[in-house]
Structures are given as C-alpha cells and as structure tokens.
Image (cartoon, rainbow, N blue to C red):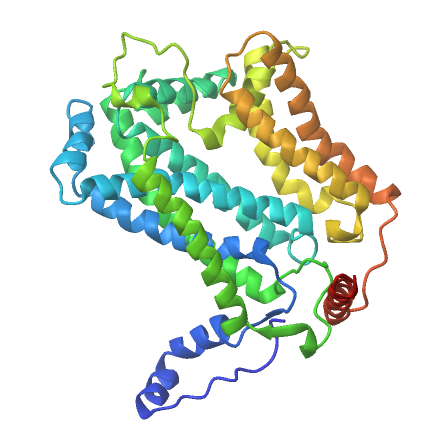
Length: 428
C-alpha cells in the first residue's frame, strides 16, 4: 500500500514552483488525499484521526494557559483561580484542557482495544505498535505532571504518592525520587520540574506521532478482516471515503467533549483539588485520575510478599509490568490469523479482557480493603494471563474460521448477506 508513484499534478505555476523546491503539497496529497486505504474500514478506525485533533487541541490550550500560570507553590493555586475568573475565556480554556485530557485517554483506550481486536500489532507492523505504546507512556507522564499543576490537595498528595513508588526499588529508588522532587519532599522545585516537563512532553508526543504515522504509511493500514491488500479493488482513496467517515466520527466525539465542557466540567475531576494543597492534612482517599485507576488497582492488589520481594516492590513491579507487557504483544500472539473476527475463542476472551480492564478501573476508585482487594487480585491475574498465557497458547490450539481470499470478497459477501436479509424481511 505504500508503494507506487505519486499521482500529484501541480495545477498552477506557483504550485509547480513550490513542488520543485519543497514538495509539501505533493506530500499532503499523497498522504491524505490519494493515499489508498482498505475499502472495508469501519468506525473503530477513526480514533487515530480523533487523537491527532485532540493532541493539537491540548497543545494550543496548554500554551495559552501557560501564559497565565505561575509555577510557584505560593501562588500556583491562586493563578489557576485567576485564569478561571479574570482571564478572558480562561474558564473555557481550562475546562477544554482538563476535560481534553480525559477525552484523549478515552480515544487512546478505544484505539488500543481496536488494535488488540484486529491484530494491528502483527508483522510487519511491530514497530508501529511499539511507537504507539511509547506515545501512550508519554501521555501518561504528561497527564500525571499536568494533574499536579493546580496545586490542590489531590495534586499535592498524588505527586507525593506516585513519586514515592520509586523508593520501593533498592539502591536506585531514593536517588530517582530525589531527582524527580528536586529535594526530599514535594515542594517548589517539584512543581517547577513538573511544569517544565508538562510543557515539553506534548511536543515530544507530536514528534513520535509523526514517526507513528510514517510507519503506518510504510506498512499500510490494517482492516477488520486482517487480510493484506492484494489489488487496487481492495482499496479506495483516503479522500473522500475515509475523511468523510473520520469527519463524522469527530463531530460525534466533539459533541461528547462539548457536553462535558459545558454541562459536566468537573465530573471527571476530584473535588479535593479545589482545596489548596496542605502538607499537614492528608485526604481520606488518595486516588489518581480515572485513566490511571486500572494500574492503581493492580498496584494495590499485591498485598503479599513474593519471596525476597516485599509487597510494596511487588505492587510497583506489577504496575510497571502491566504497561511493559504491551511492548511484547507482537511476539506473544502466536496466531497466524490477525483479526478476532475469525477467531471465536479469542474474540470471547478479548471481550472478557475489556470487561476486566473496566472492572480494574472501578476497583481502583474503591478503598483498598475487604472484597475489593480480592477482586483486584483476580482481575490483575486475568490481565496478565491474557497476554502471557492466552495469547501464546490460544494461537497454537484455536481453530479459526475460513478467511476470505481478499478484502473485496469479504465486502461482497457482507453486502450479499445484508441484501439477502433485506429481501427476506421484505418478502416476510
């Protein structure tokens, strides 16, 4: 899909002059207009475009907010309130940025689940998948550091708890924590470090996104059947077919985004963050933002020692391991069939995995006591079993359904089936 010659033809003298010196219009035309995409893409494939728009939104609102924010523990909280009250449309910018982070993670989780369902990580797209996981890690770091900036109670204590994880590592843990904090406790140097990194990391994300899109254009887009493109009849031009579908999905997504901004702006946040940070008063329950809750649940699920590894270090290793295992997915899945559409057992166990991830998120918001701990332990076990046991073993023993010979054949069979059903309903 990445091969072939450019079909771009400059239409005016100016376009010819630019094309001969800096073929940017040709690059845009070949990448976003004439670029061939599988003809059977569904709406699950629209989240990549949504993520690109959300990244631009986050960078633009973040840059403007940084103009008015003061990275000083004495006035950080007041500067945020000043943005809300005195800066023209400051309330809108802040709500767009805060809720935009949540919408960003909604889209990225849908994007990841889609990749797992349709096998988008399989050869030759291993590097494409790895770049996506790197983007996810950078997003998590950016979101965590941004959550600290309002300098409310949950910001302060969240930073205290998260940076305290590193002390679980022998020898290297304390120096890493001191480097992050800029001292021995969360204070002004910590806030300055986090503000600087929070401002820098989105541009790093943008750079890795460019590599991600480049890798996508080299290997070509996957599709719901998991079958590679075999002829020109299997594809359609990106514009208008994919752009119209992406545009419609973006409209629906931004309606949801706008609903939270204007009607539920603080629903996804924590009320304690509207209380100024107080190092002498610990909140009753310290919880991270909702998109970190599954990993927080796995961290707290380890309440027992594992040989020489104590429960604290074990929990931290499990939390970091839950993300590290994503890098190994292309090699853990042993099935020769890419898409779950033709893998009945994998499809069932995949949806159980999705339920398990949602359950972990809910458990992360519950107190670490009683039945919640036991449920988190079972859910954590299934999370790792899905990657380390189910993927390798199921690929060897599962009998998949018959695959179509081409994407075109799959589309025609689907349309034929829909036509037969419509005719039966009409005759009935």
